[in-house]
Length: 368
Image (cartoon, rainbow, N blue to C red; front, side, top):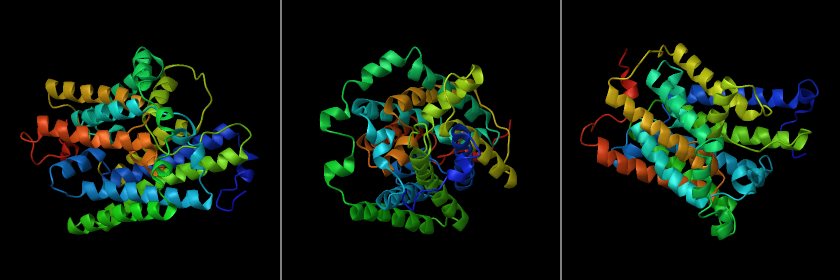
């Protein structure tokens, strides 16, 4: 066994494999939730700062999280600590049409809902009822897209164009990207994030928390890779994603579990708990609600678009935008580009003239 893998023999002799996976997902989720809450990690706000050409603190935070995840993932892959070839994104055919269409839908949805899936989960733990209800709608639509009434439509869109047509989903292989090139690519964005953070006087704690949130992705990949090589039953190598896990968590609450528990079973409650604890310690818990009927309709429409779009794309702003992009999956980069493009267009058409200074109204803490 490579020295860079975690030796889980002692733990696996005393706990069942599903228990170990759930506890690991819970711990990684707590880490990500706490650091995402403290850093104000938000792809929506980052995309809008970029499109409006007014970089503030959100764009550097996203860049630091993204680049730290990419660099560490590639480094661990090179050292043998992560088996990227066993990840869902690279081990099986993926949908190119789904990635593009789903990314466009997700980007529009996150602007309407004023937060991506992970941001809604983090905000809901701090007392934001808008985010909580939107997150529930997101999970319901995601479940309908995964196994319910929307599944045939999703399958049809997904089958229009797949990675089989282009010879695989490995962008590094298609472009001939070496390990050194990948490191330099990540380092470039990391330096850009640091410079923007310095320019906008972001606090050291906020920038450190952003890096920590990004490192939760390779941590998840590293742990699940270790489990695949030491556990008796098959284990999926995976990073962080919230579309599928949110849908599964919803069904776990509504009905008797039909499948086994895994890493993602602990991830969603872990993120919620981590965000709650971080907000509690920082005295940032505050109950918030909808301002009006039209506001509610906007949030829920956005959540529904994200639910279907994220499931169609095979990942959300974190699942595709950070985990998949760190693996250099073609579909993840298509999704990420689609999210940024549609977020910018939606903002231009709906928000820019009305709210020129309000990238993240959730931080205004308007109490109910």
